[in-house]
Length: 544
Image 1 (cartoon, rainbow, N blue to C red):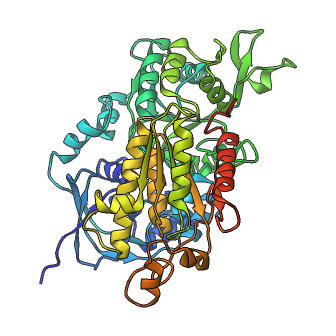
Image 2 (cartoon, rainbow, N blue to C red):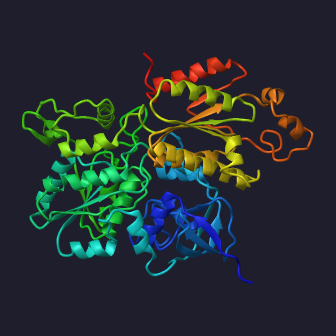
Image 3 (cartoon, rainbow, N blue to C red):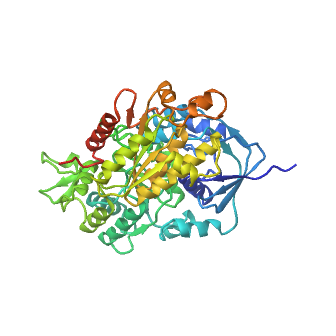
């Protein structure tokens, strides 16, 4: 008897991975990894047959799927993109994966945080496009017009040196200088493949559309015909050295002959120091595996600006001169404050685009997500904050109260785990739209499960918004004593099933931005603590 088709809606990362699996960018991979392949990649950075591959490519689901099932892989709008015949379904150890891929299980690393929040099951099996033209049609809708498949770039680069440059940031004068120097070393026939990652990158990065405008703007700084601009729908993992190795293999598959590796490649930065990994660890790993890469690494030193020579030079060639630099943090601060950017740092056309795209934290879309038990004080605190924001902040404020959403947006959903997650997913989607357009969304919802809250955070951050989780940590006994709607009494007497904290679990946030217990402080004191956090974090401007 045939098994019914299971429909899975791809996340943005899974959508990117599917694209690159089906078009050959991830060769020799042809599908998402089974457990043996996943384990070999984690432990040896190799596929089971011995070929080099450093990053696990997996398809995660929230529930097990029987082997033999057909899995339909849909875009977020419900368009079928591919089908998979499931041959394996397994439950991986996410913490082990984080430790082996990232060398850490610290959730302050964005890649680690993403892995620890993934659903518990992985599935694998042969992949097929839904129909012959589906990838072409999907790409025309989803990706910039410059996007080219590996086969197209292989044909364009045939017979000439092709230097690939991976980036998730706009190009500034330093990038232009180092790529021009590398091209000069390769000879007059060499061309640059400007290959920016336009899938999910690091939260807070400049959005892909703005970066594409900036990339187009710098093309006149090169010789005519010297640059091939082709965005890559790659979901970065921010895995430092391992990721650099992965990036090189992907560019090899696109026909590049050389690959630029600079300082702190694919490094997310560390909250307590400049970089998460040693600055030149990526270069060392690529040098170690250079013989089997199939592409030549171009290892670049750290550059800075010489005002004396009016040029970017390697730090090793400073000869005692104090070189100038502008960190990413300082650039963002100046953009947010509308302060001057030195002309030596970036072309004026790029700065103009960034000023249009970049809003400081106090002007970006913002979502405050209040989570906690029923009667913990979420709605009260969110409502008090809304009134104060309306008199202080120019951004439009939208309240998304869990009980109100249940009556309208999520009418018909029950209280099973699946329905609760779907309710939070819907709230997260609406909040992300508010954030995308520069507004403030205040969400007051029990949202009992960590994975659903993590999905809501991802939606907001992918939309360019700031996400702040506030755990209203009022104890269960106090909430039950308050019981303004009589729900705890019903739940404790058995009249009300699936009640969070009584007959259903509540998974407390492990690392919320702020934790408040309204049994210990008054409502006004809780609001004052929250307001102080928001102003100190730069999310709100301090009141005069």
